[in-house]
Length: 136
Image (tube, rainbow, N blue to C red):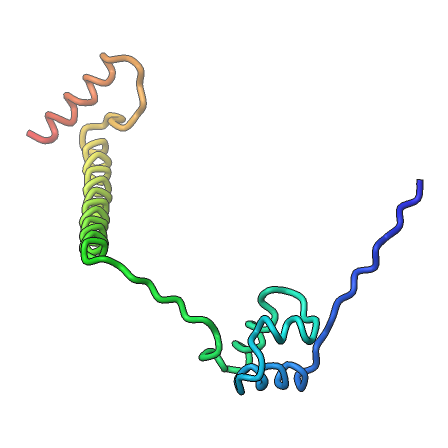
């Protein structure tokens, strides 16, 4: 069984050619689509990349987002909610770190392993009582 390999042609364009095409687009002689067809330039973003490289971004299509007042207000509300949640999360992390530090100190003072994961309720109660005694 023989497989015929298709030859893949990679085109490389000179800087002068790129500038010529972009200048024709800038002068209004051709649109990006027309230049693509005329010069058989493959790839949907090739000419757009040339335009960016040459600093002619004004030739690229601009994306404009039109929103209702309700959408803008909802976005602001969601951003505010996000900030509040992030703040609450940071406070929770600080609280956890503080409690872990207190547990470590309690373990050292009481001489018991409070953080030990025991399945027995009895051992857990002893640890809790030890912490309770420490807290009192």
